[in-house]
Length: 178
Ligand code: ATP
Ligand code: MG
Image 1 (cartoon, rainbow, N blue to C red):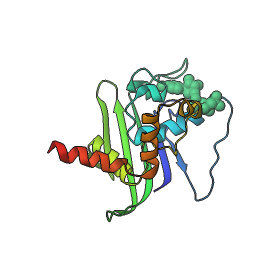
Image 2: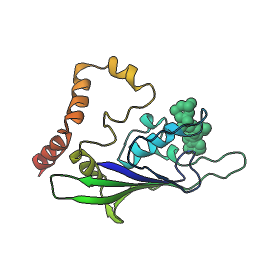
Image 3: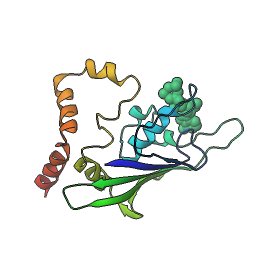
């Protein structure tokens, strides 16, 4: 799976609608401290279903919504869309756009190619592609130190994500509940 484009609106410091194309090859994001580089990585994790506000440096999930500044009012919602190339063994291929939106007091909603879907559908889409909000490919600032200090069971989860089998666990759990 490859990320082709990211669209952000009202997400953290990206208050105005912002579009980023990610071309093949290596992409670098550079800028001064506090300009929003980490916010971009967090937007990617968020649209893939991150459920923990803490791991997005917030106290509650609504903290991802632009909170306003002295000169700009706060926003009521945040939305991130990620266009990906998905090639999976399950027959799905081609481009697909995943969107997550959060409104104050109303929680998160997800869409895939404009269709309303459950959080679980988004999680499975990324798990099948061996990626997702907890993919070891997404390394946050300060994460290396916490991996070194992790317990063996926590490291095992990391290895399962890397091996691409965490989607199978989710499906097994689902099947057991039915
Ligand atoms: P560094 O180089 O120090 O790692 P960075 O480029 O990674 O910096 P970020 O951490 O992505 O910077 O951005 C931090 C900025 O985002 C801060 O100015 C912070 O005020 C702003 N920010 C975070 N959440 C919100 C929000 N909900 N509303 C408005 N601004 C926000
Ligand atoms: Mg940073």
